[in-house]
Image (cartoon, rainbow, N blue to C red):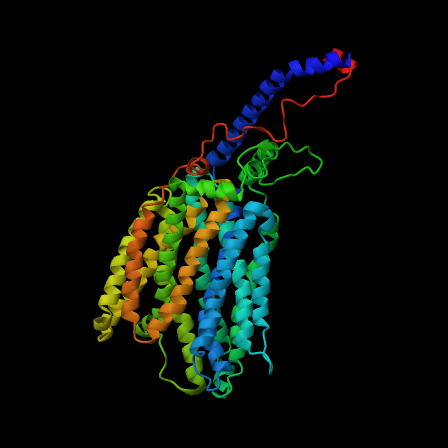
Length: 553
């Protein structure tokens, strides 16, 4: 009898094989149906929640990065021997470049981890690091063996790691939850929070400086002790929005695309789609049977094989170099902000003593509000209005072309413009236009496109690589070009920026247009037959069967 059952099971092998193929086809269709629901969903409260939760992180990032530009002046008044209005060159460079160095590390690390263990598991951890790093700066002190600038450099590096993690995580989460027709606007809205963060830093600085006016003026110019309160409040308050958003980040659901394509749990992902599209919630049953499918898995060999193909590798090259070229000019442009502030009446004051300290700090704060409103914020929202209708690639190309022209004018006409008052006003106008077309241009699109063009299993990793390339450009700008500018090389720096903007035009040509295309279409992988079977199935397995079970069957 046992032999008969064994032979019957062997004969049923073809039926098992047909059954498995049918199950694979059914799961493949179920996957595509769930993705279609996500791609075609109408804008809902859940989409708005994702934008706000992700956007608060970028608001905090920009606040923390930008605040140090104002705080470094305050630190100079308090901690330099002659109480100058700036830190010594190397110390100033240290506190400013520590954050992008940490950011580069965080972008690579969290980008990889988000593809390895999940977007949800990592989301919130990077915000905790930012909060801890920000708080650590605010309570830093010094002693005989420890210099406060060294302590700040360490804390700002740690904070930078958290900020770096925010880039790939927020980009990928907002991208994978978004409907196709609003994806560009959702991702732009998240990234545009940077503009509000920079503006908030300038406003907070203005408020705290004004609030301490009497104390600052009453202090001795050789011991402006109340300025020490200012920079601690300015930096410390940056932890508040992050702390508010932390709970919502920790409770955001895993993206259905990660659950389907990396965890390979199509059933759970389909349930998640139904839940978050209807009520914005998600439920995971810990006792549910997990049925994993056979689908392409992320491995080192698969990564090299995928990006080793020119049609895939050129996209990563295009996104990475475009971000690198953009950030060299984006951060380099800020090196000229003192010239612009002087031209619009917010430069170093004529007053001396304690009143001069107050006036200088207030001028810097109010002047940066003007610069933020003058070109920075409008550029983000111009992109928001057009990114889903005009497209990412045309916006990026236009931005690089116009920035090439603007930087060339600023560089070659620098000396002539600095000689006259109308010339300085013209330089200020070009500065604002450069700010505008960086944000209505490649600064926004270099964030958006890498969150769309790569397969789910490498989307966060590749975004992290692209973002880290940009941060490398920022470090080069702040270290190399700052030295060149201090030696009278400002015109040459601007001319070099123009050259990098020109190279960005050519790297943009390597990138596909992503407007109104699904993430799966952009992945450059065949989606029919993406699921090839049930993980662990084998057609030659003999299933133990009793005579009674066979009779019932």
